[in-house]
Amino acid sequence: MLIYYFMKLSDKDNKNNDLDRGVLLESKPKTKKPSMYNVLLLNDDYTPMEFVVLVLESVFNKKEEEATQIMLHVHKNGIGICGIFTYEVAESKCKTVMDLAKKHEHPLQCTMEKN
Ligand code: TYC
Image 1 (tube, rainbow, N blue to C red):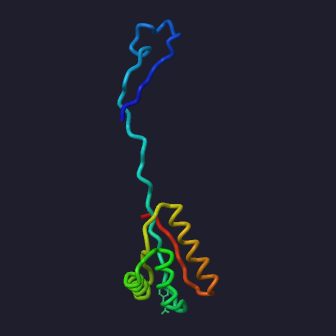
Image 2: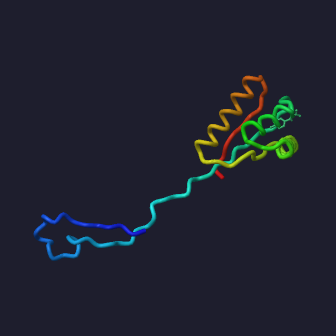
Image 3: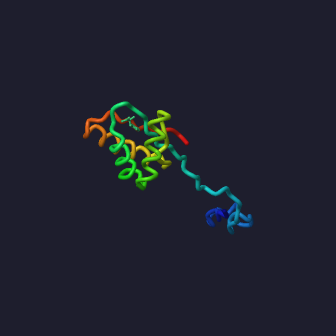
């Protein structure tokens, strides 16, 4: 990235210096890739499998087949990733899942970790 630097022309002491006519200097790009976060579902003994599949379809936009695979992975392994998002989106997805679980009185737990 190139940045155009200049000094004010009223600075008489610098009138023959390159700086008072402006110079182009190299600078590092200021853009940064955002950190990404895994959203995780945790297994429990009571939440119905159908409810977990519905959550994966409605909150994480999974089709029925993939939603079922993720649910079965969590059921067997205790934990599984249901999506990877920026911090604010991951936080919002977790809250939506927890609110839905609470509303339907299921103990389903959702959490996030840095990817
Ligand atoms: N283990 C639950 C059952 O047997 C199903 C389940 C799957 C619960 C995934 C939570 O994140 C979960 N009904």
